[in-house]
Length: 306
Image 1 (cartoon, rainbow, N blue to C red):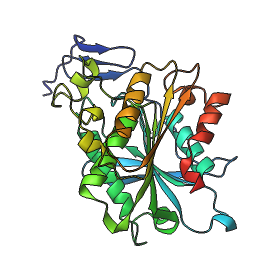
Image 2 (image 1 turned 45 degrees about the horizontal axis):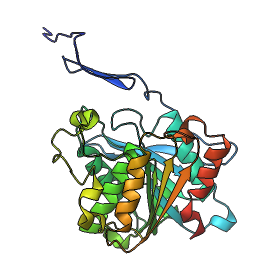
Image 3 (image 1 turned 135 degrees about the vertical axis):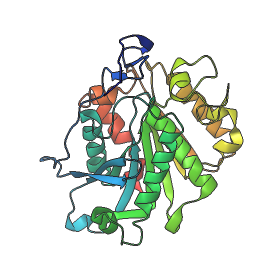
Image 4 (image 1 turned 180 degrees about the horizontal axis):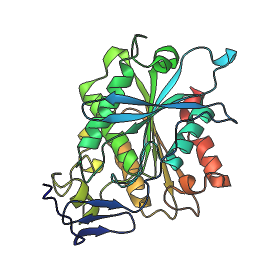
């Protein structure tokens, strides 16, 4: 006999994104649609889904740009981490499928979009650990004998880039710091990190972090407030960082603070800031065809010029 009971009593409302009921159910109001893997007829970018760990369910989507005689050699590898307040969206969401496919085409990189386990079912730091595991799994193909032939044949792990937007940018930061602390296997090298409209804490009451990261160190955990620990910031294992902010983004000041903290941390790389006028948070996902989104895509590919 099934003794499971459900209730419509609400424990936490975080509208318009999600709601948690007292019986533990989570209702995500957005970011639940799925786009199947496919081949883009215009750019020739192919995609397919892969499982990183059957034990944890960690998976993601690989993107391979059109391979021609001029691109027959190995291409840079991009690890992309989607946003969504750590709770909504996935690597398979239509907006993120289209965005990462466009990144792969524009920058001519092999890309892997990580489908990390989300809060509140899986509190942070699980998303950090999943993304680190995904990077390690990808790099394990450096010798050409991994389970995914696209990575074996086409990815150059001496030229790794890590990018993410919003919450995904926070995860990207933590993964690149961990690479600086723990090192990377097989001689892999992170050349650059790109943060689109990054989400960081501001050291005040934060309802979202109380839900997704209840065991963080308060009030200034460096995993969500990097400026609180310059020594950790200085361990970023990449040569350059590009940070995008937007004039009307409610997180703009946090991106600016990260930029200033990184410049004074003692980190030895180069950091650039790009500020988009008259636009809000992750506008390039909502309106990817607008002029400013196209300019962001063009400006964001510091790695395509290496």
